[in-house]
Amino acid sequence: MTDKPIFVVQLHDARRLHYDVRLEVDGVLKSWAVPRGPSLDPVVKRLAVFTTDHDLEYASYEGVHADAQYGSGAVIVWDAGIYTNLTRDDRHQVVNPAQAIERGHFKVQLHGVKLNGAWAFTRTGDDWLLVKVRDAAADPAVDLTVTEPRSVLSGLTIQEMAAS
Image (cartoon, rainbow, N blue to C red):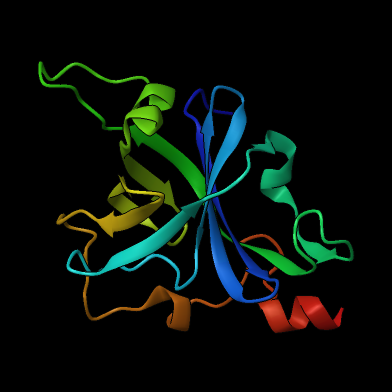
């Protein structure tokens, strides 16, 4: 057990395949739907649509949604781990995660099975962007959405979960 907040990335095959990036903030999972998934290339800016909060228990959910409440379709836990808040204000003081999201910029250090290093969520109008920060974990040559399709919990692909 750790006192660090958790993060989870769930691959969800709803109307369209997307990655739900969820970070624990104030006892809930703050969530962004990232249609093309996280990129390790700092030049690539991925659309991230801020969505509804989820209970912490949802972080380990895998299965097939039958109803439209969360979007019908298969879900796997594509990645999971803990994160460190890197968001600072003008005086270099740590900004509370909820305040960072409210202000429209949240920078985190992920410590996951697949995703590691620093990432920035930045609001641009109604939507957000998810961008990999230039660091040792950045690698423009690797696309984890292609090379690492399996769940970190069950080992299943999204297609295998849908068929189960």
